[in-house]
Length: 138
Image (cartoon, rainbow, N blue to C red; front, side, top):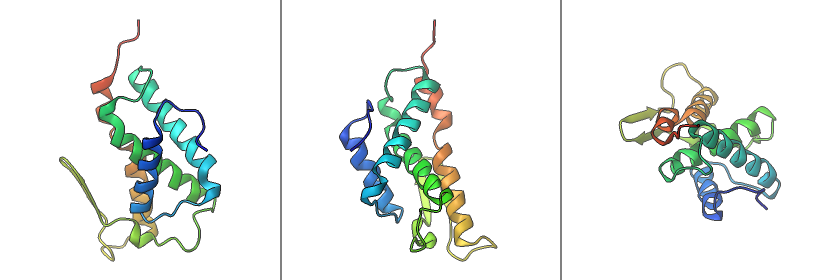
C-alpha cells in the first residue's frame, strides 16, 4: 500500500516498471520504502517549484528520481541483495541532449561504481528543469 501522495496509482506502477527496466524486482517488503521515496521526491519537487502538485512536465523526471532514491537507500542499507547484477542495470541512457553511457568493462570503473554513477544521475536528474515550473511565492 502506497502512503498518502498526490501522485496517481499510475505513477506508482510506472515507478515499478522503471525499476524493473533497471534490473530490480520489487518484493512485498519494499512497499513502505518505495512509498517513502515517492513522498520524498514529490515534496522536493513541490518545494523547489513552489507548487501544490508535481507538474506534468516533470513526471518522468520524478519517476527516475524516485528510482534513484529507492535504489540508493536499498544499497546503502545493505538490502539490495547479493543477487543484484550491477552490470545489467544500465548501459546507456539518452534523453534529449543528454547522453549517459556506462559501457560494460570500459575504463577502470567496476560495475558497482558505474551503478553508483547511475544512481547519482537519477537522483539529480532534471534539477535544471524545475525552474521552468517555478511559481513565485508572495
